Image 1 (cartoon, rainbow, N blue to C red):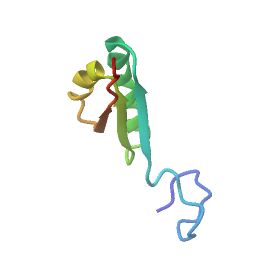
Image 2: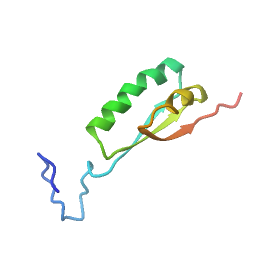
Image 3: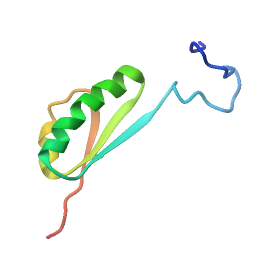
Image 4: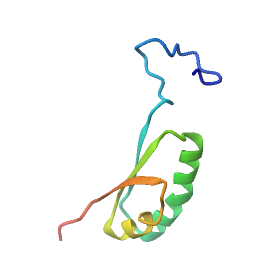
Length: 82
């Protein structure tokens, strides 16, 4: 299946169509408000790239916000050593 406007031949082994699969990593390491503002970004990315798998690298406090978002497939938590 060829995407509208795409010049790639789907039968060719390379280059791969970047829209057929995609992993997106969003990094949030600061404050809780940053995590809240990222949620609309997640929705926009999923709308634009419906096949994409969206992952987040978050602070421990940001994880609580991202846990409630079903469009995020995996959350990686960066724990800072004090």
